[in-house]
Image (cartoon, rainbow, N blue to C red; front, side, top):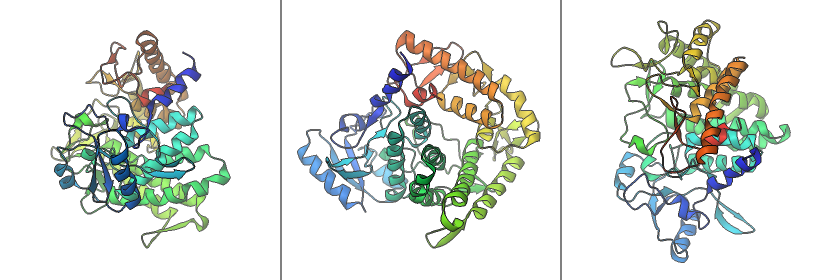
Length: 426
């Protein structure tokens, strides 16, 4: 299959929460209970009216329920027996009112997955699908406005789970694909929402900070329903804090380059680029102090309860490379780690596991190239892509996960996954 035919596979990963997509978006094999419920935020009467009508005229058997615009763990527990999907943004055009389509991860993961959307957007932009990328961003922006902050997905059982902070990175990628003169208008709402989500998700009263770095609050969630793993509350994660550093520097970049006067007022507070740079630099110093492991000469998560670094077999240095958050001295140590985590099929993220997924591969390529290690990035890219394409040509599968020892895909719900498709074009 040529590149054009492969790119057309994006069409098979598009759905919406309306009559054009109910059969896909409502389907959720990850749970055993019936899940044909659409949840609407209680301050969105337009959506309420739309879905009330659809429950009466559309032949899919689904129910409509209301949730508060700040759903918490109690909200989630209340709906354990009626898992379903939270409504997305509606548009009104010549075809009438319909839900904005979004790109989903793959079979079994047909919800809007915020973390996966970053990789999807990168792949969509590489294949010239700017409008599809902007639709994803529009749906994610709606989440911040109508359910108060970004959740891991728009499934009801994830409404207390914070999304990985990749929103600003998505927006920066899309903005970079636009003509220079169109960027300020595109960024106008997204900068505000980036700031709102940053404070609501990571600096709200229930957020936890240790040594100036973020950790995940303790939550009750089935890890099998998530596309990514959440570390325990006693761990300071490299990945999370590198992504938050990247967010802080992205917001500074937006304000400095695309906002008239360089300042923006959000909820009565005036922000400028210097404010965000200072936040970023403080986080960077803390990460270098707490997360840099002098013994292994790399970045490792820190276990607060044990008072030591943990997950020593993981290649979490890739997030430091990606966020451009590494000193010259650290870079010397990290370079030695690259070969240690390279095998015949690409980056082996965790030396204690044979499982490989596209996100870690993509993060590593971007990070290595940012640091000028273009040949190392190309080597990892070619190994991964060769393995993926061999499996695809042999078995017709673009899998969710692969066995990095054998090069054979691991069984999952389906045969097409967006972040793996994206990895073939990056």
